[in-house]
Image 1 (cartoon, helix red, strand yellow):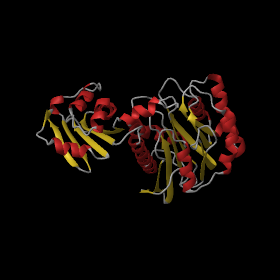
Image 2: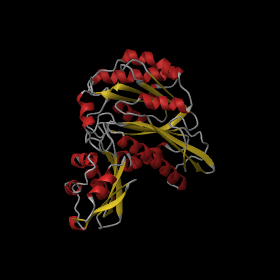
Image 3: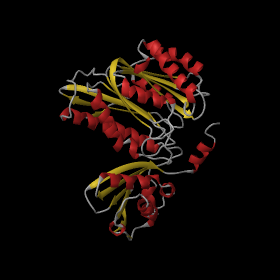
Image 4: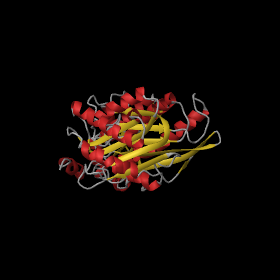
Length: 406
């Protein structure tokens, strides 16, 4: 498996576009991803009880539509808490895209991101769709424009692609994602679009996506808020020409590994680009009795505001990590815990068997001053491990969210 330069347009048969339609004041605000042929589609969505209209639409399509051929996305307005009008506007957005693409509305996923409670400026959106369709292209640049158009408070576009072999055929998987605030385990204000030219059954595609979200997008946190609009979808159009994967064989395992690789890369980008963030925090818990225990513990640590502020200040206040572990709901023996920190600036053990080691505070501060900081926690109970990703909590996070609607 190899990383390649590209995103959603990297696989065969996919085009994309991103434009400024007028929803926002200045930045690009509409994106379209299109498969030249009908594709199998799957999606995973927010766990929030309050679900935006596009989320409800996509859930319906994931259950009922045999083929998906496009996804249209607007940024600036979330179309959440908008009632029947919001549902109708979402349908109008899907139908307008479908009409210009000459495909059924039921083959068009939708996604929205932005301010909750406002109605979509549907006239602006419908008027922008012809330009979206006209600008569709299969170039890397077109994929980047789409990735830029879905951003809200993100500071850069997030793209990734890999190539791998299935049955002697080259297969490509590409993706783009956005999400900077309202990010919390079990998905958040995250929008992700994955495209692949693999041939795989719709049922196995759904299972592969659901399983890999568990280890990737569900393992990140920025601010402990779970949004109304989480949407991660994958399209598989079969244009690689491999024999269709219809069972959990070696080919399925290769595809799942590729899916995990792309989603992990995107998840880490999202965590690193948290609102106001200056550092990526990676926490691995090992030696746990079960993966679920390790996952709960690692997520508790990356979600702790006290841990996040300590990382921002390059302060090796490891007691905050122990505290977060203690309220995670997982039973463990604090007197057996070892804790290590590391970065490009070195590594250091802070805790051994639950007690502080004779470490250098200056060395610890230097390690924590790096852009990417890792913590490894060993429970010494079992063989299970899990990794979660978060970021530091800075002054700028408050500034960004204090005037988000301005």
